View 1 (tube, rainbow, N blue to C red):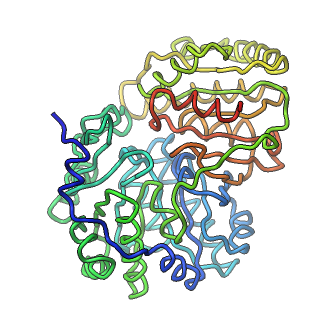
View 2: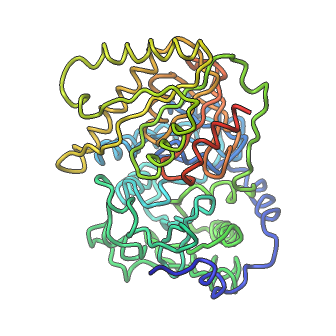
Length: 467
């Protein structure tokens, strides 16, 4: 039996009263810094608007963007799709390029390692690689897992998912059973101990409680951060936007006092740290999509929520669907001709004005260990990339469901270098405008996370654009 979310919220102190976002914005502008988000999956842009995301990370491109003095700059690493050793190697490469870009541009940066709000990702290896690459080994690692738009909150150091008005510890969800990034603890102190294999014990992890945040405000947050030893880990509790605003101001105060901080967070804190509203909704307009062809939806995510959303969409009856049988892909040979066949069929339907859904079979195919499971994911994603490469008819728009799917399609099939983030079309689902170097220049590209929304959300997003 889980705790009712409203009952739990009533037991907490009232939110901090002062309006902090304008003050945070003033402090941020005064700092003349850019927040650089190293995003392990493209869904991390889901709370931002009017920002650039780089899909390539060579030093010249990063330098060019930093010279524009943006508030926030995303770099899509897609490291969650890689084995740990490759993710670490990639982090070192990007950090080296980032250091060169900082030197060339003269722009100081704040670094956020953005990862999954349900705790899947390469922790601590990736964060430690970033700390080493940017010479920040003495920085406090601040864990901010709360993702308000998606119903993820941290209370009493326990990370919860809100579903059906109940607080479900994330360790009791399907995400904790992930074959590559599974875990047993929702208590974040114990989670750190688990993920570091005991190298960092739960007792060594500090935390800032909701009582600290709501009753003590930014000053207490700052004082507690300043008391943390260099290189230690600190957990931030948060159950709403106002909590994150207090945290952001406290972080600014601690950093102004000379404390080095490296962020490992979900998406909500990113705009707030720059003093911007989180999750400002993007409303599609008719002239955003100039093509008379049909829309294209590509579904690679296999989590149960995605399957329910796909079923709901297909039951609507407006979409032509093509199923990719994953088990067949794992047999060597003959994949390319099948990909070509799917591409040609998709072209015919799109040019006739039909909306098309290409989706993987719903049975989860797994390997013997985390690395072999990631390899299966890569084989499936590569096949979807081949399909997209073969499509010649420009869709009205593209919706990609799943983090790895959306990242690989945009980088490998659409061959984009960067995109402009327009904002979320519904909470947690970002909309990108692709650059002129993309296969379909200026096309609308919707990055739909596998674990966001309710059963009808995929249909809701499609309908918003159709209307």
